[in-house]
Length: 33
Image (tube, rainbow, N blue to C red; front, side):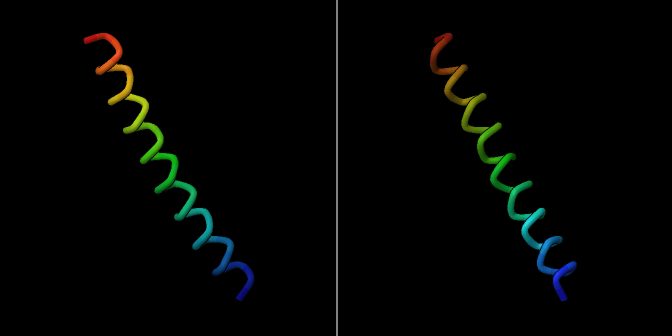
């Protein structure tokens, strides 16, 4: 049960990381513009 919860948390972190990466790319694009 604990292992399943840990995996779910990892997926959540991965989603947040992807969001941060996308936000950073957008910020850099706006900054260079």
